Image (tube, rainbow, N blue to C red):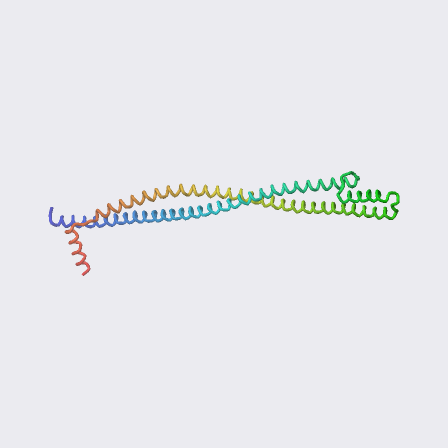
Length: 254
């Protein structure tokens, strides 16, 4: 091979090598950019999943606290409802007894208040003492006394029945309010439990997706690191080549 041919051969290899180096550099840059973009995207996904899972944990904790409060309130409502039922039964017994006494007095049976019995005893004692000498005036006076006490007894029963009725109304109203609060609490409990299930399902799904994404990120990072290590190992230059390159660059810069 002539010297001219050797020069032409070197020139051709120079051009081809530079073009190939540029092409390889562009391809390597494309691969690097692709890895960087994908790994950055994976990092954003991981942080987004972790942030959302943290939010879900806080929401679930808050719902648990709300459910605990609701359950305690429902227990209190049930206790108060039970107590009100007992109180209403007691009031019903008092009402029944008062009405029986009322009817007995109206019918003139032996079931009479102590005040009436006391008046009757006074009349009997008065007759025993004075006999037939009791004046009409005394009898009329005693009759008035008897009727006043009888009316007083009826008035007392009226007041008792009115008081019982008032207490029953108040108790029923209070019981109705408690039942309404219990109903609202149960409805809210159902909603919270549904929300809890939805959040738990979402958390489970995100946890699964996060594991998959982390596995992919791990594989990509490992592959990228191996690629970088290979390139780093290939671009280690010998001392002679390094000297020639440095000398040429120095001359070129001058």
